Length: 316
Image (cartoon, rainbow, N blue to C red):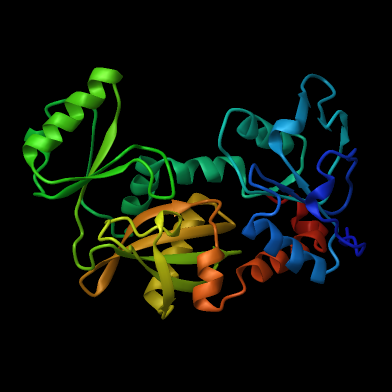
């Protein structure tokens, strides 16, 4: 099934009828003029792909013996590739699952994205596969202080999240105890307690993986001493050598999570690295501007290859 060579359309048609076949669709909650969307539109247009930008909350989902999707009230059919840039909220996961049930080619698959969001699961997969992780205790009770033996300060995280949200630095045992008591007074909750890796405070590595291959590495630094160096929180990036160790670690983690496109975050620990987390829908504005890597182009070429290869179109 060759990809369509008709011109792509800009995302100002989001309210128009849609009946799609044999091309490329982006599903996103973002502003259609946001950086990643604009860049992906530009690079896919260069390759002759016709592109639709769709918002998940405008889809209707018909289940039963003859399942169907509508977009803005019109039939929606896609025999091409669907790139998801969102998995948040209630509607988007249901939609992506239904697309997969109906045989549509979704990148990344819902199960892979949810696995990456699940931080305990990510840590379990990494540790089992021999990928170094920070010392981690997963606990839900107030007696966590007696079981945490890796010293202070430490990091406490909620079990799901991205972009540095839901992460707090704990300085001592009293603060750890008080924090768990506070959280559990609202609702029982499982949290991750992790060792504070202080080799480079406020710095980490973001490695981008497309189609199983690491395409570049970026050193991120926070501006204000915040241990979180995420670009979304004001962190700034600079190029970093993509060594065989860094590439192998990132590629292996993406493979473990079955992610075709991934952002893998690593912390410095001595002359090696430990895994922080994995993002199944990574942003790349800072990466492209800092590292001179055409991330959108790599994604576009991968999508075009899927469209032109019938044997791989529905392989997952």
